[in-house]
Picture 1 (cartoon, helix red, strand yellow):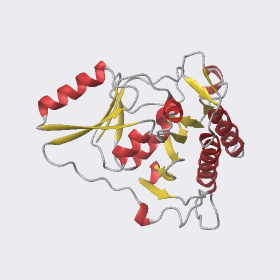
Picture 2: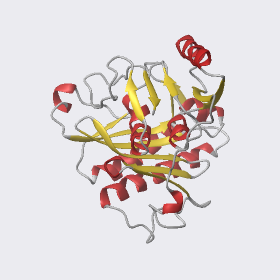
Picture 3: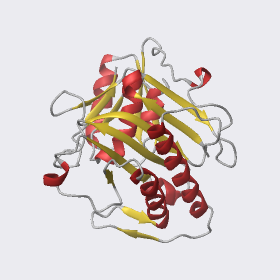
Length: 272
């Protein structure tokens, strides 16, 4: 985890520590031959890993004095939330279906939002130990690889780890598709892109790794024309914004807002 190599502002320090610690808790359960799971009221799965990671992450973030919106918390009404200047938005285990399938494509998502906009984002991938983190206001995003014990091996914000996007190959559009949520609207969009381009490549990933793919320059566009919640997108949104990408609502043609009255996101598109 974070050690004396870290030289980051305390608030980001805490969030990164929270994400890594949550990831360690997830892996402890992931390695079990069996783990408990159930369906929530909305029919989405909930495992003991979701709960364990959420408990740990909350303990860290409470120290900041900033209110928390988490998928696994009992969230406050909008009447109480609407006065918040800033808030954390957390998904302690994004990609629970991928966790249950044991394909490794699940993440810990933590974002700090101010006045409805993500300003810090952290995504940790426990299986591969990839740590994505971004400061939107400084337009910087990084990817660091931790060791087998989830320890950082070099300083954060190392220039070697900085994410830099590259232009797509001419005539080829790489479209990010969901591992578990490819629907007709998304397929129709892909068909429209094919009509405008010589070639379309589909890149499939689970969880918020889809944001990471496009932020790293491994894909060109991410259409999400299926339901998501704010905790599914806030951290990835921050990372994409930090490298110059936009996360645009299909309803308003503006950036997705956060801490809305309804925490459900509209359909959106991640692109230049």
